[in-house]
Length: 129
Image (cartoon, rainbow, N blue to C red; front, side, top):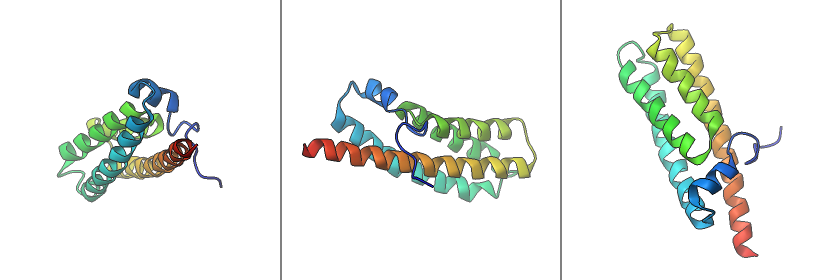
């Protein structure tokens, strides 16, 4: 299986380009910040996922935070997975449905980070030329 690429829906480079006004160094900075911060948020989310009944608000807020950040950079598949988790929590879905949504979110996050890494490598290569 090949690694996700920036154009696979994991990262909309056109959206990112529009958000940054075509500034490649700004794209690089935003993506690196997203990479670091989204890992922290996902770690917190995974830790709270086992406490769904007790800490649903916190879990929903973390999913919402990740969704907003993902939308800003064009990681629309990740944003959709975060929204699915948010809605499952809001609708008081069963714990198994929420755990499934958490797993889907983690998978979408990994794919987004792989696409971000690919785009960062592409930006670095462009800078060398």
